[in-house]
Image 1 (tube, rainbow, N blue to C red):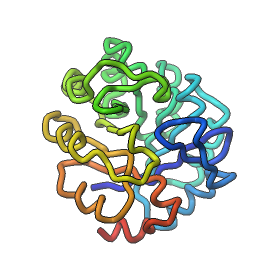
Image 2 (tube, rainbow, N blue to C red):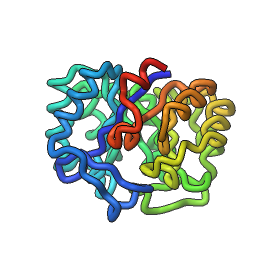
Image 3 (cartoon, helix red, strand yellow):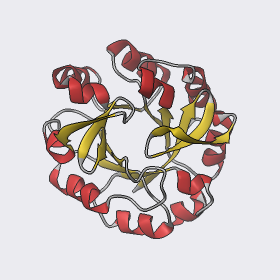
Length: 236
């Protein structure tokens, strides 16, 4: 199971939101590049970057230069999400070296376009499934649909995707543990590799996730709040 420290960026800073609420934000670092270097120094194999401004407004944002610096200076594989909604954006980031791009809103709203992009960029795109009580959410989690997350994922499992990132909005940033039931259901019922996201609060959460067939787990607030260190997590 790969661990991906999360770096969420808003207005050029490293922040965390509670349940995806832009009004419940805490800033952890003025420079996300410094945080990226810290995780690299602690042994991270991957980084998970989120452009919150891009997720809310679409397209590249004020955080784009920061992502470019991390790509050029840190040297770790990067998974990037937030505002990836058109082919020029996908090409821009893949050309710069982003390994995996998470597409959420556009994949839900325009599945034919997403399928076309998946074939144009095989192994580069990740289906971002952000859900609340099992229902898929879009537009930076501002809109909740009537689409079941697992059923939606099944529609895409034959595409040449890098995987699925499943995030439970109700748990994200709350340090109350992941949605183990939905995460395991998704990992067992869908053929694509699954990355668990949202709610990891302690080392026991990681131990439990490791028993599931998940490819990786994204860790955010638990690291920033010193619930455990990245080195301790990697040791598990």
